[in-house]
Amino acid sequence: MRIIYKRLLLLSLVAGGIPTAHAQFILNRQVNASTGGGGPSGDYIFQYTIGEIAVNSLQKGNMLLTQGFHQPEELPPVPAGTELIVNMLLYPNPVATNLKIQFDLLSNSPIALLLINSGGQMVHQESRTYGAGRVLITLPVSKFAAGIYTLVVKAGGHMFQEKLVIQ
Image (cartoon, rainbow, N blue to C red; front, side, top):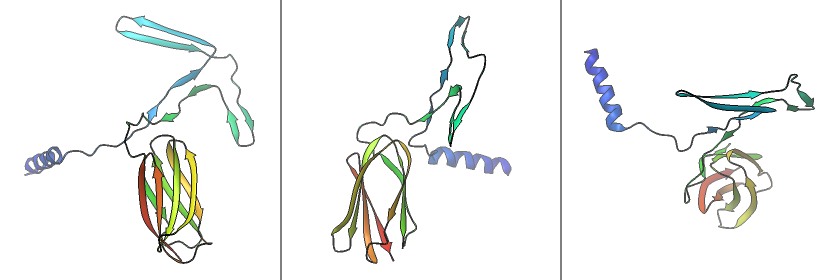
């Protein structure tokens, strides 16, 4: 009986497909060293670096500078026409003071935010360029009248809109 359940589970996974991610981070490995090199040896390629004899960390306030490996996360290039904004969230909704707008931006891009009231009037507009990655924008809304609004976010030729209730 267990074998039948396992086969049914396997069949349903194969038939239904396995979801894939839209974009994954790439780890870009860089080494800060005074010298290094590499070369093949049979079926292997060896690489080495020679660092400094003394390694010091420098710190000033909340900034820390160290030597060694630098491995920033980067997003792969985005094909033309791809929607640059994914996983957009507005919270809290309804909101009384500060609205948080969070989304993942797949490449560096100018972003335009528009807030439109129920009468179709644009009551707020701002534009700014953001780097690729998770973006969190805080929008103070206490100056707007209570009601139902539409938040429009424009990026890369695409437009995203969400309903918003301001109390």
